[in-house]
Image (cartoon, rainbow over all chains, first blue to last red; front, side):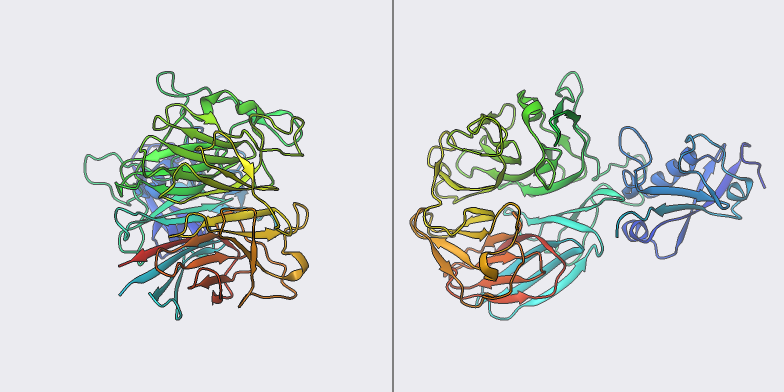
Length: 109
Length: 391
């Protein structure tokens, strides 16, 4: 398996919340995206949006590419929501052993 | 045999209600986009099977949906999963204010609830108004207030920045529902003329296809702003027009029902004998331009019918003289609201009138309001109702 920062083609698993799975017309709880280069929040989200253009604007704001306020990112039991977009994700995510979790924050009732 | 299709947007999805021309038995299809807020669903007059829907979520933002088969199936134009080789994917969801030097307007500020200035922030599409002639052309009224337009069936959207660039923006302020551009009326006799209304800025008109706009609020009086007759700042809730008389508009303001006969240059109050002139919806009979409908609501602090009685009021004189319509509507213990986009008429004879409530009921009258039936009773909160009359 490739190291997070190394080259080569990687298949990264991404777990989507139910509403975004419906929007992207995927049945499974996870999707897989392929990318080359470092496995970062930015590169995974770009690969996800390239594969599913309908998700553009739903996770990151158009223009600023900032995370939408009620969306959170988790991987390997760590919260990456407030990290810079170019942070390297763990080797387990880059290797496909663990998914990047995109989660709708619980806000309100 | 004629057919009627009622397009209902709710807090938790869209529903399509259909009936034959008798409008007595109804079928309900949906929910489409279950769990998402559907602020507006509207069909194209040029192609009735082309329908657009505004789907939004506080979590995931704005989506535009499009149907080409009368609401049976839907797609996100520009959001296809695999664009054709060599084709750049577009994004139907992309609503970005135009601030480019060549065509746009600077992203100025508007007045916030506390009187301070606040930057423009896109929230959602409140209204989708398809062109009268081209099913691929649609106008969108959005929050924070602006007009966008697509000419490729929703694949891409561009702001018409002349409105936001009018210069009075720093005096616009959000109403309780946000600073929404909710009313967008195309003049069937004058392709360059469009009317819009914003809560709480007021009504505006363009005569040059959207390049420039002027406020049309003369005659409005609002007690909740420092200058009660100001050029802008009025909380207009909804405006309706009969297509045969495009210079006559009827307005349900926060308080007051108003009328203009000179395309908005001057307004006069026609609340007359209404028991309360607060409300949200207003609409015009399909064949009688002087017959109008409102649903009076108790007050701006109590959004519910007076005395627990859900009553539509009809004027056959273009305002001033009103009669309550109650047959078939709950006349006790009813405390629902009827939101601004939630009334519509069909074009059959007799004219059908429809409205939806925050309690999830959709009521219909197949005789111009004399009698009502509930054609849906347990939907989520109804945000919008539109009607298509199909031959």
